[in-house]
Amino acid sequence: MERTVVRCADGHVFSTASFPMQQAERLGPGRLVRCPRCARLRSAVPVALVEKQ
Image (cartoon, rainbow, N blue to C red; front, top):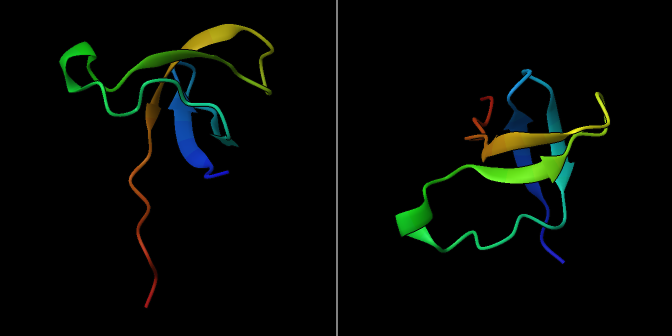
């Protein structure tokens, strides 16, 4: 199962295996997921990963 790195509305960065409807462009990038840091349902968006050289 593919994991997605996301950032919640409070700024916490974490990975999740369930980021529903990732391909639904018309709904925008944000989804409601439970943040493991603040333990609440938060709007979360995918984080662009940057590789270090």
